[in-house]
Image (cartoon, rainbow, N blue to C red; front, side, top):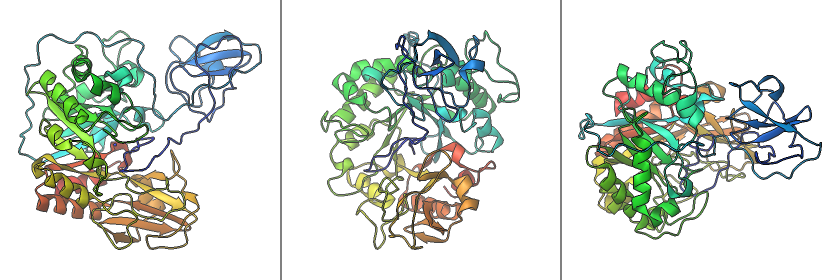
Length: 492
């Protein structure tokens, strides 16, 4: 659910966000000057920077917007007062995706369950794409782009990523991007500008407009992800309270018509991701069961899960099968197996379909994960195959074939070691295939990523296995005319 600027959803390694990380202080700092504002730094809601003898507090994600000229009522910075020239020790570091909880709690959910049932035929193939809420900032990718790229007409479902898990409860991830940001007529799906007083703006309102244009399209609110999975441990201690909070969020009257269900992206139950969880093998199933009991049969419930096919790996330490039995579909994250989080290599494509001679870790491939899930009794028709719309790469490489050594992560537009397909297809075209995916060697850089051709092969595999479709992370990595999603659609 790539994921770092996206989010890190690899099977077993840790990736950190790699936007410009600068020291910041909390908004409660009083008289000391925060570290000076810089144009290259990324700030999120609540971060403080100093400029011209004042501290300034960010209202939302920002980069290259000077506090001195962006501090009006509707601008990003608030003047927090004169500072004395000293500095307060840093307390937090910004991340690429906003990490603060909303200041306004979601309103109480309706007391009666929704009466509208999803219209997607459960037996049909799903084609599911992630939309990252933070993509509206530096990436400039908005809901309208899903339409103009031709992707909306191909998708069956959109996963909106992410809601947070603060305190073991479902909470808004980024209120500004989600429902506060005003869209101009040119930016809007239907060509109609937002007004200052309308009850819902942001991506949620744009998704409402997209669904009006594509009535069969479903939107699922994804919770957690790499960065925000920490609260699932508390959720597992009281699954009923967690489910109640999630229902209140998804069915908030302001946007209840936008979402058709909920997705749980817990990384990882009874194992380690960004943090470690020890809530026990039954915790995942308990949480999913509570959600199904609350949301009922007419709401979609899905889950992104580990794709660790190794013996005794992440899929073996939690009772996934019992939880999946309550789901509509499950999304094993069959990407991010390998990457420059192992800075010296060996080089390996991050999303191999099958094993191959020299693969760095046995069981780290899509087929191993699919077969393991089947062996646990998970029906193939519930499983979707995951595709990454990006590559992972190294620099300092001298060997074209996989398995070479490296000196570190290759440069990327948004973070080191990761680059979108739309960039790599011309910057470093594929030079070979291995394990059912592609790799590229250019200069001293080595990248692994999927192409339209390898995606076609993966979709053939999916059909042969009887899988329920495919999903991908994430929409903004594709070309403006949707090369990769077209390859999925034409072959799924």
